[in-house]
Length: 327
Image (cartoon, rainbow, N blue to C red; front, top):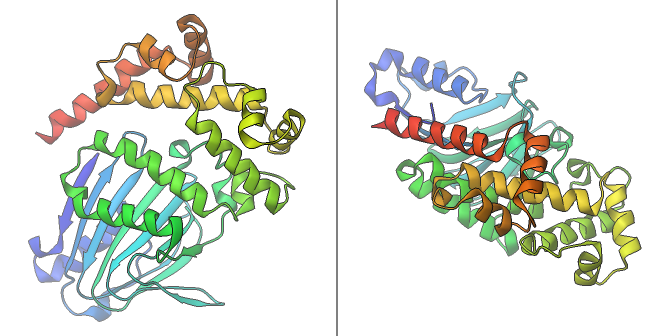
């Protein structure tokens, strides 16, 4: 299902805890025994799944809840939770970290974590599979569970974006979530730049890892330029081409390979989006800096195992099927 909702109020009191536990299992959220919370459990879930498999779930409840443990049988990826309302805290053996409204916690899927909601709670949970993440996040399972304050800086913008998303989530169609996916992965990369292990940068020192991230961000802004090259990247970054080459080599890639991969990813996103259904495949490939349709088609097929046309037909077909099922 690309979208589903549940309210325990729609069930007899003696079945409300059971239905809540079933919903949490569907979201792969490890909920403990709710038996101590009375006969019923007042909870609501609204879940949307994007075309690339990013899961957005708004959880609301009046009775309190604890999420503790892990679901190990999950696809590799990253989860986020932003506190919208109510008291909450992240806890482990070494610390207890209160979560103010707007604060974000995160971690790799399958890793153990404890989130405590002692009373009324409203949380937005997001689960991003590795396939939906920007290729710069290479090893999400190397992340540790962490906390991001939403009080200032770019993290405040990130938090505000997630809070706004929570307010309109139930009114969005799955294809509306595509630009949200892109924004979330970019905000996440910026917020986690200190988590060197997540970027698969080997022994790269913190300063070089941060510089690599900034160079990648600069490349994103000019992917549409056909003349984008190592020389151009070096000029934008104020560094020598040799330094940029070594920087990318330490991350296990070359500049040209990275640029081609990101262009293909952007084209793939546009081909799958109903918002760009009126654009021809040629227009999309030129839009992201490819010089010719034949080269683009060969590169796309080599990367994804099908032609751009076949991929678009399959992706838009799934969107149409989902829309028809929702009617």
